[in-house]
Image 1 (cartoon, rainbow, N blue to C red):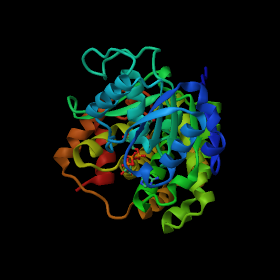
Image 2: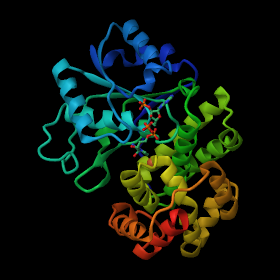
Image 3: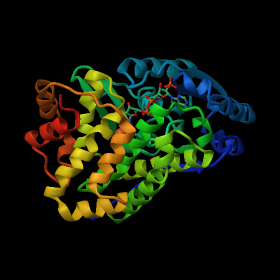
Image 4: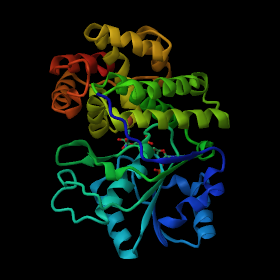
Length: 363
Ligand code: NAP
Ligand code: FE
């Protein structure tokens, strides 16, 4: 049985926000904008302000979301939303502000007793408009918010259908000055989502179709990613590829690649997409033994075999991080407890995970 759900209205193309600002006129009279620092420089905040002015809507700004959002920023943002009477949220930025915004939209309306990670998320969530300014996480089309969990020393995903944004605007122009490292890392995150979605036990005809098209769009920009030279069309293709991959994982979930990557991010600050890029080729190599027929389909979707994929990803990653055996054993153990182990068509025990880590970031 296959299930697929995608409730987000998506508007894309150059100046799509300015041309369609009326679309969120009915969301309320006052918004909270949740963002980091770059939206003030890349033109996105300016377009949002234009839209609010056109609609006669008021807004407050919460621009203190750090990369890898924290519980503290969620609490601060939710407090501000409540104090200022925000009726909806506009999230603008990379995955970090987009994820924080979802948790803020929830915590602004629901009494969270204890930790947000154990809170049963209800239906009452402020409506959200998401505007990605990186092309990777697909958060604008997922019901997930990934928040740093210091108690468990990892990153934990909170998830509920009510965390889907209502509306998303995809405009590649905001990424004109996105640093090359962020562009590459986020593109690898999106590639990872599409591939991991195909590895999921929940993959089906619809998610596979989206994953294949996502990979076509993303890998079609490989030369741009390698050389760092992007046209606006390349930026838009990456953004569309990322959104399609987001639709995939919104329905399939991710795989142990994400599970292992969280330790590299939590303990060593490796950017999320880079962590996935480091781990994915070795993970796929192991899948070749475990699920050969499915791997043939995945390599066909990638348009190359495992060796070429590994080589091409390595060119994008440059010099690799390396960690001691002791650390990698600990990360393998941690990843073996993650719920996405059961989500993968190939079973990976702790030893398998260690071997993938060792082959990817071994000292
Ligand atoms: P990010 O942490 O949101 O952004 C990375 C850096 O790029 C930040 O310094 C950011 O600055 C800057 N930046 C963003 N847009 C820019 C632009 N247009 N121009 C110049 N600089 C820009 O990174 P991300 O990779 O997009 O998101 C990673 C997060 O998403 C992780 O926490 C990850 O776990 C999560 N994630 C979520 C999902 C999901 O389904 N919800 C899926 C995968 C990953 P400012 O922030 O200061 O603006
Ligand atoms: Fe991801």
